[in-house]
Length: 389
Image (tube, rainbow, N blue to C red):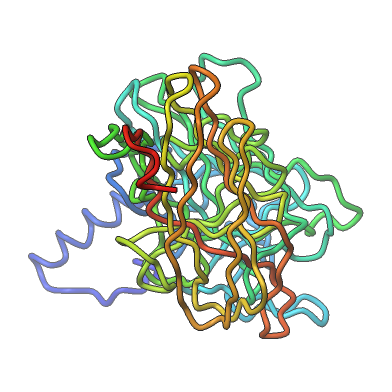
C-alpha cells in the first residue's frame, strides 16, 4: 500500500517538495474535495491509496475520511488481494486493494460535472458471502425524488466472480456526490460486496445518421470500459436505472445486457457491441417514428463473442406486432452473420426489440451465462419493398 510517510528523506529542495506532498495528502484525508473527472477512474477510484494503520482495526476502517478522496460510513473493510475469509480467498482483479461494504455501509465522493449532462458510472463488484447482496447507487443533488438504482448481485456473469456494472444519471448541479451503499443487514456484519475501480464517463447524445433511423445503432456510445478487464460491462434493466448508460436504447427486461469491446471479444463492426446474456430476460429496445403502411428494412449482425459460448442460439426481433427469429449456431470461437427483417409500419411509432430465445452457459464449466452478440443495427424506409423481400 503506497504510503508517503515511508519515503526516504531528501536534501533541501526535495525536502520542501516532500513537505508539500504530505500537506496535500493530509488535506485529502481530512476533507472531501470535489475534483473534476474526465472519462476514467475517479480520484483514488481503484482504492490503491488506503487508510493509515492507526485508522484501521484489522481490516475494518475506523475513520470516515481514512480512504483518500472518499467518505465512508457503516461497516467498511479495506481488503488486500489474497485476503482469506474462512475457506474463501478474496482476489482483487485489478491492482492490490478493494473495499468491502458490510451492513449499511456506504462510500461517497464529490465530483465536479457539467450541469445538465448525462453521465455513466462504471465499477467492478464481487459477491462474497450473502446470496442476496445488492448495491444502492444514487447521486445528489437530484431533482427527481426517490431516484436511485438498486442493483441485485444474485446473478454473476463472469467466470472469475467479478462483474462490472454501469449506472447512468443526469447531473442536476455543477457538483454531485456519488454514493454506493449496501442496504443489507446480515447476521455477519462483514458480509457484503467487494467494490473496486470506480470510473465516470460523460455520455454524448448520438444523432440519427442519414442512413439509419435508429440512434446509436452501432453501440459505439456507451459506458466507460476498463482497459485491463475482460468481462465487459453489465447494463442494468430500466427498472433499476431509468437513465440508460447505452444512449438511444432501453434495457426493458428483468436482467442486464452486457456491453463488450473489440479488445477482449469478437465484435462484428466497430469497437463495441451488445451481448444478450440472459435469454428472454435480457432485451434491448428503441422506439422510432414511422409512417403507417410504409415498408421498413431492419438489418443487423448476430454472432458469438469468442467467449466459449457454444450451442444453438436464436435472436428474436420485434417491430411493433411483427416478429422474426434469427438462428445462429455458435462454436464459441467468434463468428457472425448479417440478418434482415422487412416489416410494414402500423403506427406512428414502432418499438424495435431484440432478445435471446434461450439461456446459454459457457462451456468452460464456470456456469456463467452468455448469449448471442448483436451489433450494427440499421433501420431504413424503402420505396421498392420487392427488392428487399
